Image 1 (cartoon, rainbow, N blue to C red):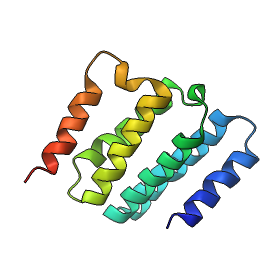
Image 2: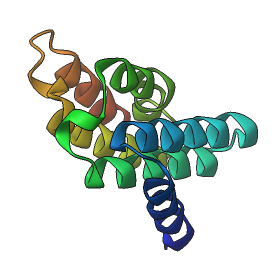
Image 3: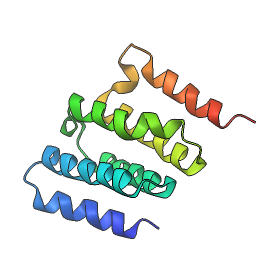
Length: 124
């Protein structure tokens, strides 16, 4: 139901001075969750945490380096994951990254390639 994840993101936002610091803390927690537990459920939960954060952040709060780290550690592996729940959360994060950082309009076509990979994984 996402209750504890929402509480975590809210608490982190309250204790950090800037949105960028809060973003870094939540993204570090998401990476740790995925790495330490290493299950499809943990990967989906880590992506859910990242999505909650991205939904609440001002546009400039996520640096290009943080966006690339999120793409490398969670989103790209997520869109080709065997579990549909992980792919769903990865596509959601990709969309939110596109909105908050402009990654979807970066001109290199990566967003479209990632979405094609996600859709191909779900093709019948």
